[in-house]
Length: 398
Image (cartoon, rainbow, N blue to C red; front, top):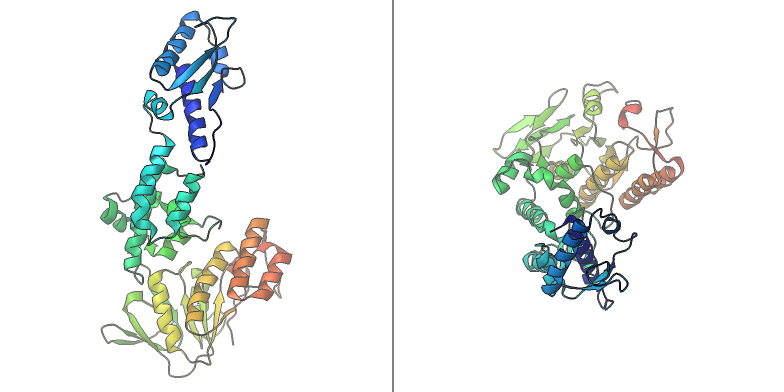
């Protein structure tokens, strides 16, 4: 088929696909062969080229897909005025192309078993029915959504467990990189509707997909009891445990604080006493805490005194407040309240900062309010800045 004829028929099919997403649309679908709508037709150089285009269009007309309207002055086969769609399915077959409505029909059928277990499926289908994409994917990319749902189903079966990203990818897909190619779909399926896209590595950690297993790093007075019954006193400056092995946290005296720290460098410096003796409990979250880490965190929360205040110190940016909100969920589940530490955007010292966009500020404010940090939310709305943990002087709660 001549390229210009294919371009014309493909444009007509695209209009039919768009019309298929609008219920009640009875408007005739046609393509005018004007310089505005199809400049390539007017730019044909030779009579032979034009004849080849006309022959291809006549073939589609004989197949019952379209009707050709000719310019009267030029006579039949002289100059096409426009083509009108007669049968969209026959047009798709003429182009040897699977149309949107068939892809959507298959998507609805194949996603039906998942819809009851995953409400996000209906959101995907709703976008596709409206002619929109879901994280850059349309109905023709159905396999990406199904594969992402397979990942989520697997993770749901093991809610407190972490998995090595590429090993799980091989296990599920026999392809070590397949899971990483699905990150945008995984983000869309697990995000709050209309939420900004998350950083891929923060998303992986939140889901429990790690590049390699992460230890649970803890500093301060106390002891860890593990699943095998062994009891280990936490040494100086800190100890690391497999999160899944921790079954109990013990402390001889009520600790004044439990402080989670997002940044590894800050954790190391605090643990080795740069800000003074560690007389409370310090935990390194590893950035966004994973499901296995959060299970161990819940064990520690259940082991501390009711007198112990619970703090978190993270970056003043979108990622930092996402981490804080996740921790706040666990603290709230333990019947306690998470207190911000050094996370004010109006500090009592001069610190380097970066301006934040309106969208970034909006998300930080929303997250701070969801945690219950209303004063910090107000500060963020005024300051509109990012501040990294490393910018602040090292201090411990008292």
